Length: 298
Image (tube, rainbow, N blue to C red; front, side, top):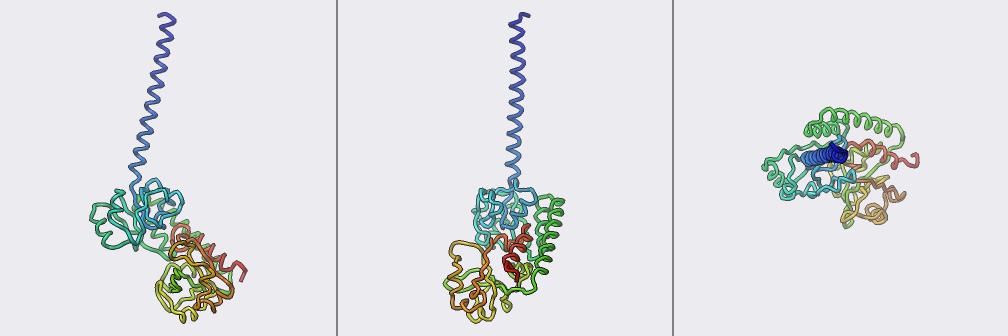
């Protein structure tokens, strides 16, 4: 064989190997992409449920979310099927989920009835207002995603961190503040959190006292009830839109003007999902609320 033919044969062999390698890499990438798309099958409804999915290392499974699912921030790039308490069956079915993980309380019921009848796996995750409840939420999500071991690990970590945060909050102040959680104050009508609410639970965890003791749930309060509650601090979600009100406008309402909170201009605003979600970040919420409640050392 002549040198020219030798060089041509060598070139052909090398070219063949390179093309084969390139083809193999391309096929592998296509398989990986297809596998990723196949894995993205979960619609998560409820901000804390979505946080749990991510904390379990299963973010790649998420295909769509509801409006309350805004943490971590990159989750907001997913399709949004609407607010969890005002869902439409059409919106949910349009994203074609293989599995729906829904926080307890989603609705309306007629929309959920259509979804349950559509041959889609639907798992309702129980609500929570304490460490045991959060652990149960985590385990329910982990079971649905078939990662029970990760669920056990995360649940243990969350229990431990929350217990430490609560202990610190309860021992760091001798004078517990009376706290009123205001959900909204539209047209001067104050809706506040009574007993048996997420707000009541987080206030107590952070070393405060819920100032509203004679009602259960989130209720509109009379001027007299607000005066009797006599809050030292007003707690609100940091929100915009129809339910938003400035600190000055709230404290100048006739019902609020004579409260200790108005005299000291004491209003705390926190991210709503962090504060009331009762998910993996609840220990952080307890620590931050306690810090703001007793920032002056009292």
